[in-house]
Length: 80
Length: 123
Image 1: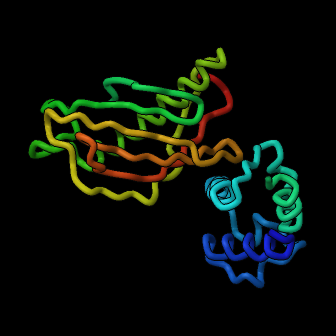
Image 2: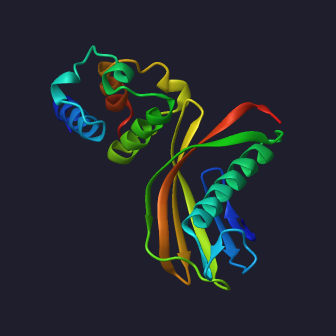
């Protein structure tokens, strides 16, 4: 999967789950604010990412992933 | 609301409950939906408790944060045994997302997702 394909898949999966427009998910946007995540729905995103991309995001890593760009980079780095 | 724990690990647990007539949640000879959910919730509590116990920690107070994607296909009758399989789907910011499937005599009776939150300080 190319980086661009990865970005498009991440955006479509998250946009559908959290009922947002794909255009709202820009690389520099803050994930929690854009997807309107609270502590309960944050775990939905983590579970969805693990299910779709096979990548487990540890809580210690999660705090560093603030923007969509950081998420793309993390997934690219950790996908087999 | 659990009779036995068949297997348990940090990420999964399998429990069973035989439905008794005297069970608080029995109505007209069936374990009610609330009873199935309480059984699932206590299975989650047992898994969380095992997790802290296995690490040598004191038990911690837990809360159910959310129950969703709940579906019931049938209800267990008095005398039947309901067995539940719980799996961790994800963890973030102290909240654990679990999936639960409950079966009676091999037939699925219910499924749901549940979020539990454990207080950081032991009891």
